[in-house]
Length: 330
Image 1: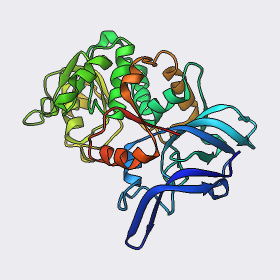
Image 2 (image 1 turned 90 degrees about the vertical axis):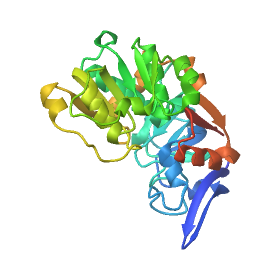
Image 3 (image 1 turned 90 degrees about the horizontal axis):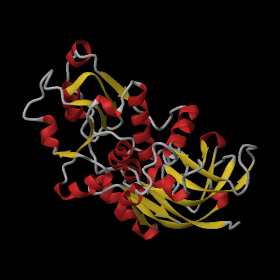
Image 4 (image 1 turned 60 degrees about the horizontal axis):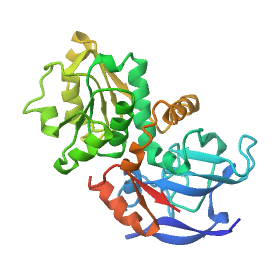
């Protein structure tokens, strides 16, 4: 095992900020039960925030960002994991207060680690990553509320992003009529290739004015946007419909009324992929390897990058210019 390795490190002191590749030692890594030789990571919006001086994600410097990683166990004091095991680690404190996945090695608490499910490769796992887990948790929550392909159309907002693109692919795989919403005119063909049957603009979702109740259009929705978009969705869900919300790129305010809830029996389902229980996490990761695995569609969603590409990729995701999933290869 190499004592020295490369890692993408952010550092901040007074008015100085840097984000660059450095040579690190395994002695620099934080405490944890399992040392992982990282093969892949991925780029998420939270990672973008960690890469800028005022992102309010990193709690202490210097720091290695990257909330996702997949690799092979190099050393373990946890009896659940042995050298050579293929594993996934996402969310919890990884890439926030605990050194993350933008590194050739990571030391992670065993309680945060998921064994790689049969049916997925390490690369597949990072095409999914936190975004894919969030999308899959959203579909799982909707189906637990009774959603089936026969229920009606399902809307996905922010459909070219990480959560949205994987949600489109998973829903299409499971036989749903998917309506994808995007503000990017150039990405319609991409969304159709993922399985979207209809594509709407952002403006077609919100309209000129959000009504307390509007025409009933969708049986359910997956929304990583929030804000006015979520308020508009709630007013347009069919009776008994549900929306799974997981993001706030459209804002934190929710300008709605109680009418959709008390007059149409609509449900608002909050999706948390950071601290969701391990029992749920294991169940959904196994679904992502089986009935929720869009297989060949994953290749359409991913773009492979390496250390030299990280700064550009992190900037793109903050500016809303990223499509699908950028997978970091080590």
